[in-house]
Image (tube, rainbow, N blue to C red; front, side, top):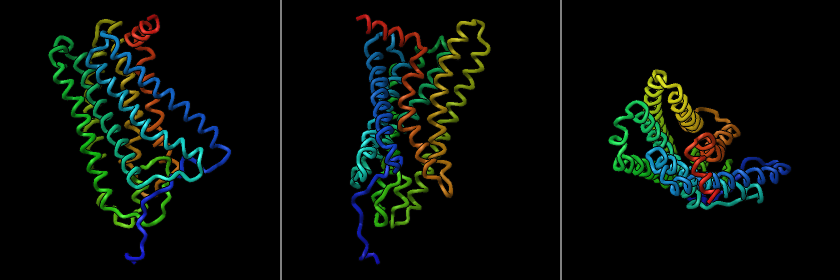
Length: 306
């Protein structure tokens, strides 16, 4: 049997839907989303780089978050757009692994950047007199660097383990990008080790980081409620609520996708979860953090006025 098997080196991405009447409208929707996403995130990075008033730890982390969002969108969306235009979009084994690897690095990095942002808000609100000392340039550099390093290591392990698998079943990936979980269903090699490792990595990262974020914002909320200044309380509450909204959206979808991925998964539901953290969250984040942010809006007005 082993000798008669043909090892696959190319796959077909099925995309979001097979319905012909939806292909063009969905293409127009998602190409518009992609353009807005890239303009929003690159614009935010530009404003943070351009305006000296935004050269603070919070905006340093926000700039890297925008970069991670742009990378997630660019890794996934162009290939997805092709599935709307062509019936059978082929992706090689190497391209498939590379797509997942770069998506995984960006997503993991984003998780740890959200932790760094939560810690930054905790120090700013709970220990404002020591903020400049605690959130030093050195600590900020370490937090950002560690976010990327953990992303490279975590994803390197999971993608490295893919090379132990052989694929000789169907060559059709029922997804709009090379997601790792559908790949396991196409493997002729037992993927139990891969499934166990990705579950351990995903659950340990998400549980440890989510606990850190909850504790940080719990302390922040307690401090905000005890503030005497109504203006200060309102500003702190708004800043933290924007962060919490972004965290809830990102963590919620990843939690359902990788940690709660149980028996009998619904493929359409999985695609919807994936759309959330690969397309919608990168679109929403720059607006969540910027629309009512006076510093960012002030920097934008300066650029527009020249």
